[in-house]
Every structure is written in structure tokens, then in C-alpha cells.
Length: 273
Image (cartoon, rainbow, N blue to C red):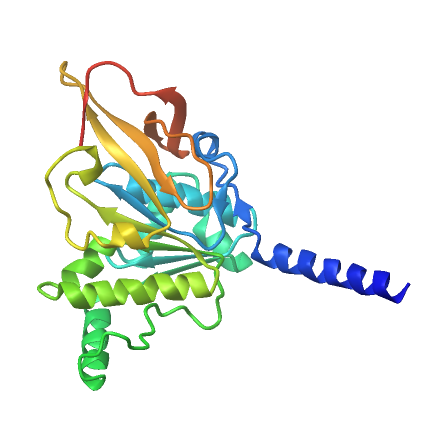
């Protein structure tokens, strides 16, 4: 009888451990996105949102912000470009209510200076005698706000602050991804690319190692047709820990709604950039 009880206790212990290591997922409530990633986004993933100028990267993140805040998720929007007031006005165009979210304690919008980050990393490296393994506090999360999701706009601005210092930019990004992963914070990081390398071009993006460090990559394309028409397309290129529907589908930007991802693939003769 004693032996049977011991076996039972051991089984309970294993099941609890399995529960702790099991991936958790969340839906974005962007219908087309959730069809491409039916399980949902793994909690704690760091995801790049890539594309050219004006493709809709920021609007995708603002649409996500609206959906998450309205469902009680806490979102931190870190801007390295636009001031807080302008961002909030932009949110309203696409149906978000930033002041209401702030009152409820589910939204924090903060503008940061990328040059300040670059200087702090340089100072820490100097103190560490140029050693690569240093303890850098990569993001200044407000102590009074513990986010579920962080939106960073943009990595391109941060990279430009490390101009001529590629190794330091990589160190910073490694520390940033480690910090977010360690704190189980899901992040979406906007990065502007002139021509995504995975579609067969020879363009090499500054800080390309970021693609290998990230858990996921979302790409928003310009689609050019021979007739002269330009449209947008959307793809989830990778999502570590989740099954994805590997299709390039049509998408568009709608006032009052944000990004709308359609459940139909891009067809015909076209060029992606």
C-alpha cells in the first residue's frame, strides 16, 4: 500500500512540472491573423514586424494594441520616433481610445531616446573593459507598470543610434531579447526593411542578426502589379512554438478599423517588395 502511494505522489509532481513548461498562447482578435496562426501567439515570444515605408507596420501594432487593451491586457508602447500625443491621435483614427485605456491602467505610452540607450551601452562596455558578456538593462520598463505586451517602434531607430557600432547593437539586441524572454513579456518590434532578403533579393539589412534572435517574423509587403496598381500583402514568415498557415494573403488599412487581413492569397502576376 505504501509503495502505491509513493508512485501516485511522483505522478502528480511530474504533471505539475509539465504544466509549468507548457506553452501558453493568446489570440490577437485580428481575424485574418488568427486564421494564419490558429493556435495563437506563444506568450513570451519576441516578434519582428517588418516591411518597407508606409506598409502598415505601425498600424498593425496599433490594431493589436486596441484589441488587447479592450480585453484587459496591459500594453506598453515604446516609441523611439513619434511623441506620445501624436501617437495617441493616430490611435484614435483607427478606433482606439487611449485615454480610456490609460485610466483603466492597461496602456502606457512612452517616448524614448535611442541615443541615450546607445550611450549607456557604450559606457557599460567601457566599464567592462570591452567584454561582451555584460549585464545591460536593455529597456526602461516603468516600475509602476508591468506589461503583458511591449510594442517597440522601431528597431530601425535604435540601430541608427549605434551607427558604425554593429557589435554593440548586436549586444544590445541579445540583452533585450533575453530580458523580454526572462520576464515572459510578449513583444512586437517594428523594423523597416527596404527589401526583405527572404524573397530572393541580395539586399542585406543592417543588424540582420536580429532575424535569428527573434521568435517570429511578420512581413507586410507592397504588391506591385504590371497594371500599375499597388496593394498590400501579409505573411507570418515564422512563429516559434506555433503552427502557422504559410500563405501570403491580401491586407488593407481601413479608417476606424486599422489593419484588415483577408483570408485570400495574393494572385496573378506581381512583384513583392
